[in-house]
Amino acid sequence: MTAPTAPTAPTAATVPAGTPAAPTAPAGRPGRDRYLDLLRTIALLRVVIYHIFGWAWLTILFPSMGVMFALAGSLMARSLGRPAPGVIRGRIRRLLPPMWVFALVVVPMMFALSWQPVKSEGAWWFIKLAWYVFPVGAPPFPWSSGDQAGLLEDTWAVQAAGPLWYIRAYLWFVLASPLLLRAFRRLPWATLLAPLGLTAVIGTGLVTIPGETGNALSDFAVFGSCWILGFAHHDGLFKDVPRYLTVSVASIVMGFGLWWASGHLTADGWDLNDIPLAQATWSLGFCVILLQYAPSWQELPGRLARFDRLVTLANNRAVTIYLWHNLLILATIPLLDLLWEIPYVDAHLGSAVEAGYTLLMTLLIWPLIALMIVAVGWVEDVAAKRRPRLWPDGRR
Image 1 (cartoon, one colour):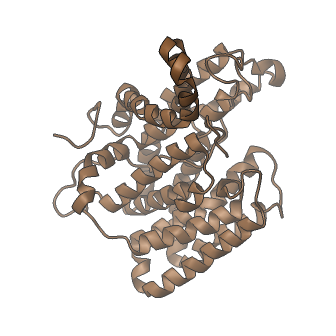
Image 2: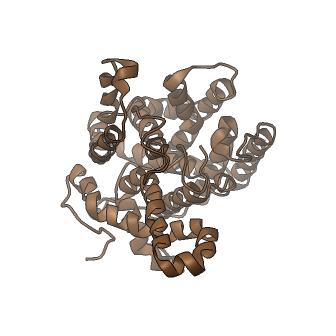
Image 3: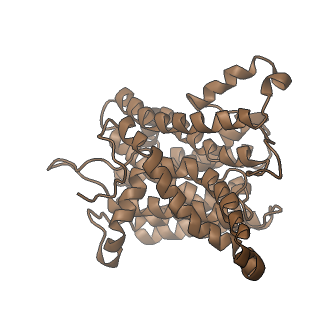
């Protein structure tokens, strides 16, 4: 789960908060909580920056995936005031069409770049393609594809498919939410802390579950407490606990996470994505503090109001941004390499371009994301049964 100059394997990402921004709510019903929308925007921004620079400390500064799961859990609890089957169908309907569009582009690219899985796995492999249709499992992809000297490095498929772990985990949580919410309302503290116990068992190597099943269970356990914390936020559990006590306990849990990480550092140092128990405890404590102090904003206040359109756009296109950002970061590399075709740059600015390469990637990725929003983002509207929009930033 690291990301050097060019992004690497999956991380924790991003995405779908589960619900693109809804139309204005009728009178008498709560509308969008702009504080939660702001947190989701920051989380998406942090994911993109992390995948460009690979800075391990970003996973401590702002644990995006824990935040995203907590926000999605809160929205899921809110939606489950309606009959559960309809809510689950709605969440799945909003998630899958953007995933299908992504698969329709990426999977043919894999085959075009010499992927031949049938030779190694046989006809059984075709069944695995079903995970691109309904991703409760791990969609297959080649670990090496194409040519190292080609436009895309040979690990491009691994990096492009990186965000799909989040789609799988999100889908698991959506399907399990009716039971989890019922358990939480009967035994709130036991339900909230149970995923931490599971992480301590399977996320530390005490019990090893091989293959993608183990990876899926580990993801479910690591971020399960954050998802259930969203239930607590929706149900107003924080109002029944003194703030000083909540913050004190959360700080202790976060301190434990850092202590655990200090003794289990990997080659990527303090990257919590590689240390499950540290990720689980740090993310939970961090989200507790964010939600304990959560205001209820119908509009962004003060100077934050200048970012209103950006926040609206990010929330309306959260799935699109998350699914495509890794592949778009990879696309910046051949585009920037064209600079060396300009004689003046090659002769006088080559060293400067090389020194500032990741900064140039950061500048270029946002126009590419904007182009992708225009190109395929409208699929999120179709999936939500709304009128398709090219640039849904709230502007009338």
